Amino acid sequence: MTQSVRWMGSSESEFPAVKPSRRLSSLKFLQRYPIFLLALGPPIFRENGALKGFDTSQAHFSFWNVFQVAWIALPTARAIIRLISARSLRIPRQIQTVLRLAFFLGLLYMISVIYSPGRAVSAEFSVLYFGTMICVTEFIVDVYRNPPNWVQCLFQLRGLSFFSLIVILATLLFDPPMVLSNIPGVGIRLTGGVVGNTGLLGSVIAIISAYSFLSSLESKVQSTFFFLVGLASALISQTRGVEITLLIVLTILGVQWAKTSGRAAYIFISGFIASILVAGAALVAVGGGRVWNAFNRGQDTSGIATASGRTEMWTYAFSYCIQHPWGMGYVAGFRFYFTKTLDFYLGSGVAKLGTTHNAFVQVLADAGWLALALYLIMNARIVALGFRFAKKQILVPLASENAAPDGIRCAMLLLWFCYINGMESSDFDTPLRQSFYFQYVIVAIILGASARMLVASRARGPSLVR
View (spheres, helix red, strand yellow):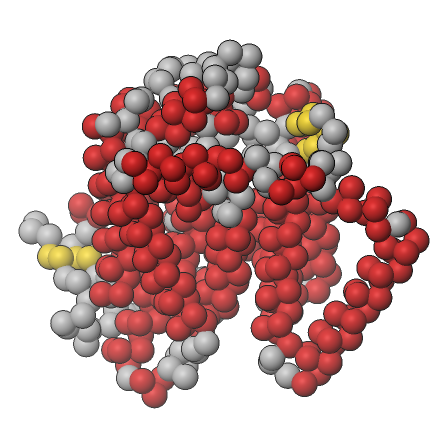
């Protein structure tokens, strides 16, 4: 049968008939939308020191490498089969633009293989990037005709995060070095290591639960429980970037909620003033110096001024890309050149030093200035779509449609977390890192819900959207 590919824009009068979306069991939901499984990792389950002294810019093979790639390959293969077998593909033009930018960015990553010092690694990560984008595309195409319960998408993401935290805690009992980090002057931190990202997982749980609590999407008791679990997990990671980012995102959520009514504004302002008074009392009781030292993990002035050495990495990346506008080569480039320049090959964990610790600078280092421009434009368009439809409501008697704005609003908060935390972590731009897949699952929710609202509003008339 010949496949009919129709891109939404020229002919949008046909709106697919759908049934009200009911919540599925977790197993059926993951079978229906396997892209969410990517949020679990993929897990590595090997000790942090396993690659100590090994040049990770060059290809190497092990059981866990094969397992990681297979974890991504399975949902990618399913997505490709479903896209090929689809009788028609309908994606609104605004969403098409984002996807085209994403695939063009991947093309630049693939081109960077030519000049990468670790061609096999760059090629592998480029394929993994394309696989993720294919999964996002298939999800958007799928939800056009079969929209999920968008609130359930949020709860499933929270459930997977909670499951990952349980795995981290279980690993702590049997093999603590896998999930603990012992940093001189800082102490022992439960970061999750190679099993998961404790700070990210806790923050996702806290943000979704806080939104659910304020929007009455579930029982207050359940929201409160998960919020406290998420908050505790984020704090246990002892990561300043996570703590600051989570505070900013929760403040944004509070401000948005305060705008909904006079009572909400009164509660928010009262709570804000009370928190300032409590913080002031704590500073007086404990001492400003002790609080400052605890927050900065005992770092000296030079460590604070350079953001724990991050500014040196950024300066190196910018300096290199001024002379080489095409970048260093996807993922492998910075790992090779930076560690070689500082002679960190022997006796150091190169895997930890192989990133710029900034998602935006990482894109620049990977494939140059054009790649950074595409990345910024792509994310600007995603944010624009999110803002546009977060303020709207579809007036149709389908729970799956009316829940779309809630899905977009909460997903936008999660995306803001990724962007802000990405200023001190490049994991959001590196495949095989949990943060990378979380960000693109969140993007898939925003684009999928936005596509659904676009089609619904155009097909049924502006009067049904407010």
